[in-house]
Structure formats: C-alpha cells, structure tokens
Image (cartoon, rainbow, N blue to C red; front, side):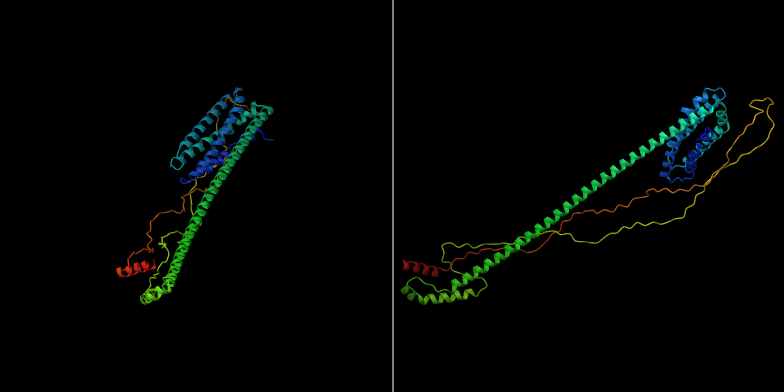
Length: 394
C-alpha cells in the first residue's frame, strides 16, 4: 500500500527522467524534443492538478501548513508558466536548451522544498486515514488519466488503421484503373492488328480479282470471232485471222486486254490505305536501392550530482521555534544523473521514383497503291469495220 511519504517522494521521478532526456537532445532532434515535451507536459499537468485538487485544499485548512500550501501552489504556477514558454519556443533553436535547463532547475527545487518542508508538515497535521484518503484519490486520478490516455491511443490507432484502409482502397482503385487502361490499350492494339489483317485480306482479294479478270481476258482473246453464220464467217475469215493474231500478241503484254460480249462490264478500282498502330517496347530499367550506413557521433552532456551534507552551526536565536525534545527522523535522498541514450528517427529527405509520360509526334512514311482507269478509243477504220459487220448481220 502506498503511503503519503512514498507518493511525494516518487511522483517526480518520471518528470525528472523526461527533463534529463530532453536536456540531452540536440538542436537537430526536433521530432524527439516535441515528443518528450508532450510527455513532460502531460505528466506535470497531471501531477499539479491532482495535488491541487486533493492535497493542497486539505493543507489550507490547517494553520501549520497553510503557508506551505500557498508556496506549493506558487511553485506549480511557475513550473507551468515555464513549461508554456518552452512549448512556444522553436524546438530547433538555440534558446530551447537553456529554457529546458531553467525548467529543470525550478522543478527540482520545488521537489526539494516539498520533501524538506511539505512532507514533514503533512505527516504532522494529517492523520493516517486522511493521508491514505488523499493517496487513494491521487492514485485513482492517475489511473483514470492512464485509462483515458489508453483509450485515446486506441482511438488514434483505429483512425490510423482506417486511414491505411482508405489508402489501400485508393491504391486498389488506382491499380484497377491502370489495369483497365492496360486492357484498353491491348484491345486497341488488337483492333489495329485486325484492321491490318482486314486490309491485307482486301488487298489479296483485289489481286485475286485482277488475276481472274486477266485470265478471262486471255480466254476471250484466244477464242475465234464468230458472227453466228457460216457464210459470213467464211467471208470475213480473211481479216478475222490477223485480228486474232493481233489479239494474241496483245495478251503477251503485261496489261491484259479482253473484248467484252456483255452489255455492261464492271471494273473494280481498288486502293491501299495506310494503317498505323502502336505497341509498347521496353527501353530499359531504373533501379533505386536504399541501404544503411553508420556514422560515429558524439555529444557532451552536463550531469549533476546531489549529495546530502550534514553540518552543525550556531542558531540565530536560542528561542525554540519548532518541536523539540522529541524523536525526529529526517530522510533526504541523494541523486546522481547518468546519461540516458536514446535514438530518434526522422525523415531527412524523400526520393520519389515515378514515370513521366511525354508526347511526341512521329511521321510514318510509306507508299500505297491504287487503281486508275485510262479510257482510249480505237481507230476509225476498225470502228467502220465493226459497224459494217453489225449492219451485215442485220
């Protein structure tokens, strides 16, 4: 069970530790200073509030401890004032360390005063039950504060988890959008390939039609000209044979020629179109590797030792001002500061690896083919001969 003496003697231990760690930080450890200062503020505000709520009001009721309670209240106000000034000071400035040292000096002097003057007075004026009631109320207040801090920390962790979940969802949406874009590019690429294949099929069909038309023209040229009558065929056989030989000679040329016996002939005129598609090629890979290097550092730390000095001296007056001729035990703790080394991590800089898309326009040059038509009329003698032939057949 905690006593009032143990409570007063052990309460400042955590605050002293935080002040010591805060004095050991460098001007570059801004994040570490902010974290330690936040913990120190929480600790000091809690201890002063519980003391002012549960201990000092009881001490004000007693004449022997009224002035001590007022002095303790003033010490608390001065401590909180220095803490507020320290909180407003930039954490990376040169003014921060001296203000921490001043706050530590004032706080430790207040602790020494409480142990030297307030603790004996509290033990004198308060009964065991009253002292135990004060201890229980202060411990309950600390437990409630710790519970509230745990609940707040749990809420922050829940909010961080929620933020991570939202970030993961956003990343998943971005990946899904990227996958849709990739599929769209693949579909466009496939469509372009299909268009190219279709164009090749059309060109092949056109070439096949031209070959078929040439073969038909050759067959027509090789067939004998007949008017349908043996008399006229025999009569005009003399000029028909040279014509056949002429047609036969014309079939040997690269351009095929045929004579049509139909009322209408359809000559398809085809042309090639240039179809340009896109595909993605790998131009190289960039690798960024992060590794850890160790650098030896050193820092000077000022440490303080407190020892108990017992001395005898002559009194200022021989009048008895305090309790005398009774047994009295006075305890005073000797302290010695030792270095406490901690490491803080902060982000020095960021390396961003991203892909930038630039647009360029490239001209694709090639040749395409198309069919043209050339219309020419035959000579007049041959036309008259055809006309006479038609007239004779009538």
